Length: 379
Ligand code: TRP
Image 1: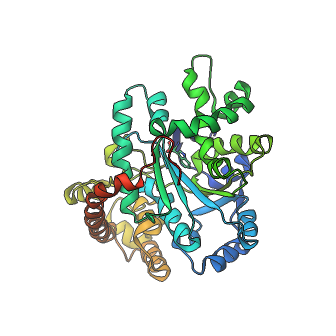
Image 2: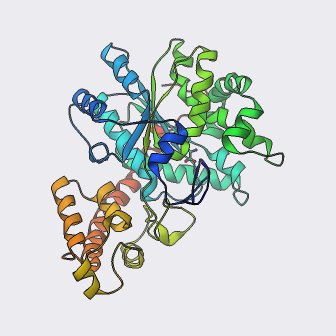
């Protein structure tokens, strides 16, 4: 959000520095996921998930209300999305993993937005042909995660604008330039597509209510940088007669080069879903760690998992077992576990995951048509 001596910045289009999540909670006005709500969620879901237990999904807006409604028999739907500016990396998939779990546990619909328009407007070097191509490519990663075929639809904004535009217009009419300037930092030289864009990202938060002509609760799992869009959307919802969407915020998978979230622009800082085993090996071996400069020093003083991307890869994705994760943390801190061993094991787990994912990704090509929403289709 803003940058100061502690140097971090979180906006929907840029994340820099080491993110202080406690400060984000305060500045964005989020509610931390507390033990009581965690328990209620997992009881209603009939199980737990490591991203919840470890508070990688750490904050929310109105998640308690979504559960109230659910208990009263008003089922919610899920909405999330992806800005297709390149290939998918593991960091992008973190919110999708929980979204899939929520869909399975609560048996609900999911709308998945591909903002090909957004990336065209915000990235000077990208053409619409490119962002559309990335969107279709990224959709394979979404499908590969196994979302329910009957309850999930993916759409490219430029394909689905016939439905979105009607909702976005209603939003746009209630959002002033002054609001988006303050929220997103636009200036006189921002292009006018950028200024309008938040109404397109808001639209799916109201789509079920709009189509069915009765209010349907919406829950949006996202990485916390996307929150500003939905602050605006929540502000205008009552003026449009819609429920405010509820939001569930995740932390960022750290960059392999240390500090900040994983960026798709720096190839070495992230593992892409299309990476070869050799690429994975090279990237993990090059990764920053919380280790000491020499083995002798590490054996004596131990490493620091709290600043180590390799450790976070285990915590976010590659270690299901809480006991094993804790043991890894303690062994690192005591100097018993060295970075080489820890990296080697991670490479094995990533390669195994990607092998299966890439296989599912290829099979997903045949399912694309079934998942994609076009023209005036509804589901
Ligand atoms: N703007 C998001 C991005 O750049 C994509 C997106 C669209 C999204 N709608 C969303 C993300 C809803 C989370 C929730 O990645």
